[in-house]
Length: 304
Image 1 (tube, rainbow, N blue to C red):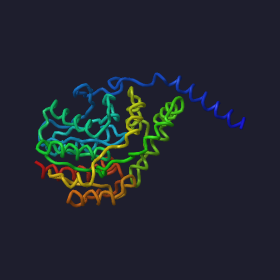
Image 2: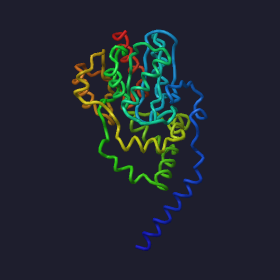
Image 3: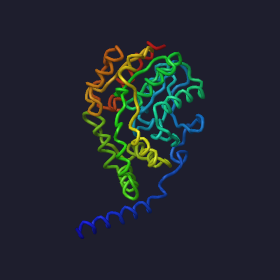
Image 4: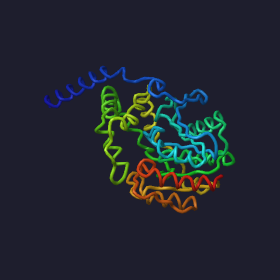
C-alpha cells in the first residue's frame, strides 16, 4: 500500500510539473494560423478557400480534423469550376473556442458563415462528425442548400450517456495527458495511420503538425471536455428520412472507424445508393483525393 501511494504521489508531482512547464503552450488561433478568418456572430471562424466562381461547395471536417485535410480535394474541385470553402468546426481546427458545441450551434455557425461570405445554395459535404452538421443544415434550411454529401459519416449521435468520463478528466492528470498525447508525433501518427486505410504513407512532422497545432489553440482542453460531456451530436434515422435536398453517401471501402455497414444503413435511410471510394479508409479525402473529389463533383453537378 505504501509503495502504491508513493507511485501515485510521484505521478501526481510529475503531472503537476509537466502542467506548469507547458502552461504557456496555448495561444490564440490567430498566432497559429495565418488565415483567412471571418467573424460569425461572436466567433472568429477559420477557413480555407479555393477558386473564385462557380457552384459553391462547403466542406466540413470531422473530429480533430483541421480544414487542411481538404488540401488535395479542394483544389481539384475548384479546377472543375467550383468555388470551395472548408470550415474549421470548433472545437477543432483554428476556429475560436466558443461553445456550446451542439448540432444547433454548428448549424447556426455554418449558415452564418454562408451569409457573411455571400454563399448561395451550396453543396455541403460533411465528413464523419460533419455529416450530422450537413444533414442538420439541410433540415433547418432546405431552400438554402443545394445538396449534401455524407462522407464517411452516418450523421448519427455518438457517445451520449458517457458524460461521467469528464469526472476523471481532472487536474493535474488530464492537462498533462492531453498535452503529452496531442503533441506527440508518435501518437498522432499512429491515430492517423489507423484512420487512413491501407498502405498509409510515412508522415513527417510537417504533416503531423497540421493536426497537432490546433490542439494548442487557447481553450481547447476545456472545450473538448464540454464536447465529451454531451457526446457527439447527430440526427436520427427518422430525421434522415425527412431530407429532401439532393443527397449522397460516399464511403471509403476500408473504413474501420465508421464501418461500410453504417454507410449502407445511412444510404438506405436517405433512399440513395452507397458510393464507395476504393483504397481508402476513414480519411477518404486524404487516402484517395481523386476518387473522393470525383464523387463530390458528381453530386455538385446534380445539385447545380
